[in-house]
Image (cartoon, rainbow, N blue to C red; front, side, top):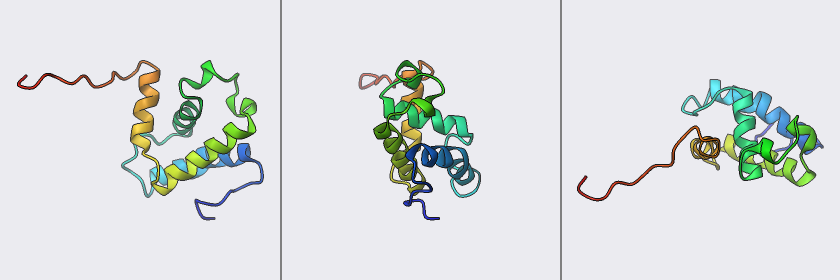
Length: 113
């Protein structure tokens, strides 16, 4: 299976496979530089990106059962982009953490300080 191909006819099933199996496997083997390894971390990052903020402020739980077809396709596409190195997982993770108040945005210091 190539990372650019769907693993299922249903984008929700595709998203779940990518976040629960493919991305964690890549993180353990080929992409040890990624900031996360666990399936729930990939799901947090991808869902936050799709929702444009903390996903549970936009979707009921469990999220995968409440994704619109467009959101599910967008989530699966983002997973494939992450796997292919076309999306910056570290930046997506930082943004997710900032939305959650777990990471402060960098504050630039005036020159000379």
